[in-house]
Amino acid sequence: MSYLNILMNTEPTEGTSIFKKQIQTIEVPITVKPSSDVEETSDKKSHTSSNKTFKNKNALREDKKPFKKSNSNGSKEDKDPNYWVAMNKGMDDLLTECKPSKEIDELIDSSLGQDPDWRGVKVNVNLTEDNIQINLEGRDYTFSKLRFMGNRNFQAKISDYYSKKYGNTFVKFFQRKSDLTSYTIHIMNGR
Picture (cartoon, rainbow, N blue to C red):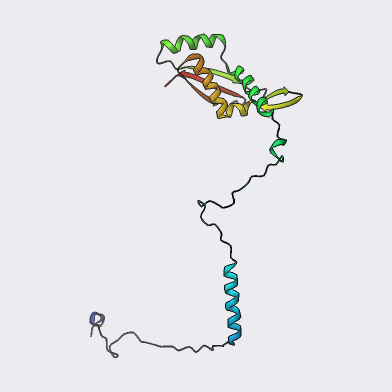
């Protein structure tokens, strides 16, 4: 009998099978506990399952107790109410430094209306003296010009200033890689 015939045979006889069947029996000793111990363990299981707390595994599900951020300074009354006034005053002081000179002002006025392909003009703002110091009601406040220039809200203030003064303008801000203490404001035709 060939190997193919042996495989094709659906009911192999005991003498024609190429595989030997071995059955092993393993004896395992079983210990039985008294019935009173079984009842105590079942009571413990039911007691612990009722005291389990539910952990939120879904990050999108809202918690019943929202997270409350603790204030490092204490209550809200302890914060200085003049801080925002001083910060806005510091932003206004820096805004005056970001305004163009009279020569650049005349160039922008003449070029915006006449030349539609005007490439724009760049205004350099030197920030070597980084600190702005404001004295308000006997208290000194210090702000960084670099942080103001990197702030999107301050950049929006400058863009609003140029759009109100010159009309349809597009303003772009970038910091020089070679000199980190200066910003360049590029004023172009609006899009």
